[in-house]
Each structure stands twice: as structure tokens, then as C-alpha cells.
Amino acid sequence: MMQIILREDVPNLGVVGELVAVRDGYARNFLIPQGKAVFASVRSIRELEHQKRLAAHRRLQATTQAQSDKQRIEGLSICLQAKVAQALGEEAEVAPTTLQKLFGSIGARDIARVLGDLGVKADHRRVTLSEPVRTVGKFAAQVRLEGGVVAKLPFWVITEGATDIEAEKRRVEAAQEAARKQRASELEAEAKAKAQARQEAAAKAEAAAQAAASGDSESAVGSDVEESEETSAKKSKGKKGAKK
Image (cartoon, rainbow, N blue to C red; front, top):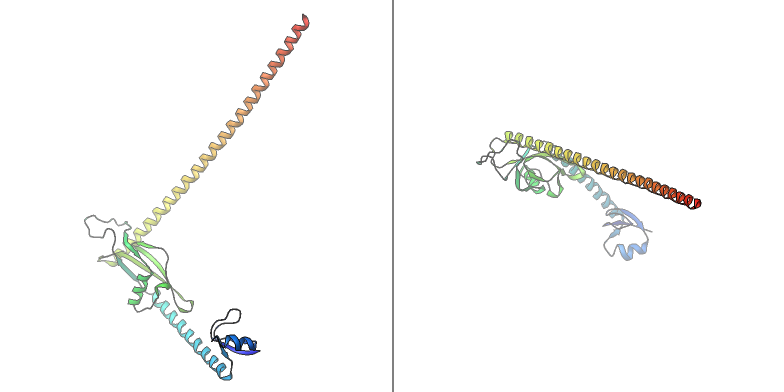
């Protein structure tokens, strides 16, 4: 057996940088010529240990930086201004509870761009929105940082050109809450209507079954009466014949 250091991940053997023991022929004829491993000499083992220490130090630095970025991100108050179908200040007045739709939508790239403008590096592929952003309102995003650290970022989307930012934030948040309540009410009404329809259908089916059962019973009684009358007639006819 020969000790080698893997230079890349090898299925069913190990991962890059791992010290493993393999058969001599496997190492000399395949792993080492293919550049997948090197001989585990005293020097290479020392170099491996050094690289492991460096990697551990880099991971620690990355995690420390990620924790710092997390605190900074979660302390931010981000407000994006976006064009809407009907902007405030136009001739038609916007009701305070109107949840205006955006021209387009707000996505992960927009959040990453704003974070970058604030000095926080964030890859848009690591940004996840809690829901599609197609209206004004208050939303939330998650930013995945190094070392599995996740930062939660609340943000507002308001109408472009709003002058009183705080007042507009309160307005759109209230409108969003009103829309959620209305949607919940609609879903509740829809559920009640479906339940009532099921009850009515069940009642109709039961009534039809009872009617069918009643009809079968009356038919059976009528048949018995006819059979009884027919039998009586035959007996009477027989008696008359006997008298003759």
C-alpha cells in the first residue's frame, strides 16, 4: 500500500487534500499520472498540513466577516422607489389603502445592487425573496453569506417620487395589510361557498336515494295487491265452475 495526497475529489476514495492509502499500482498507473494525486512524502505531508491550517484560517476569517455582514445587513433600513401604474400626485387621487402595482418587479439583483451601494458585497444568486415583489409594500429577503450564515433583510418598495418617505412607507404597509385581510376574507367566503355546495349536493343525493327507495316500496305493494286480486278472481271462478 502507498500513501498519497489527493489533488482533487476522487469518488469512493476521498476529497481534495486528503491523505489516503491505496494500492501501489492504482497510484502509479492511474492517480499520479492523471494528476489526481501526489506521493505522500515528508515534504508533501508538511505542505498539506500547512495548507490545511491556511484553509482553516481563511474559513475562520470568512465566518467572522459573514457574522459582521449579517449584523450590518440586519441593521439596514432599505427603501426602494419604483414606478407604479398610477403614481402619487397624478390627477386621479390614490386612496390610502390602494396597493399599487409596479411596472415590472423587484428581484434579487435589485437587492444585491442596493447592498453593494451600501458597501455590502452580496451575490444576487445568494439573495432569496420571501415572495414575488410586484406591488408597493413591505417585504423580506434572505442573504446567504459565507459559512452558512444567513442574514434577514426587511425592505420597503414605495412609489417613485414620494417626498415624505416615512409617511409613504406607513401608507404602503397599511395598504398591504388591508389587501391581505381582504384576500383572507375572500378565501374564507370561497371555502364557505364550497362547503355549502357540498352540503347541498349531499342533501340532493340523499333525497334522490330516499325517493328511489320509496318508489321501489310502492311498486312492491302494488304488485302484491294485483297478485292477491288475481288469486281471488281465480278462486271465485273455480267455485262457480264447481256449482255448475
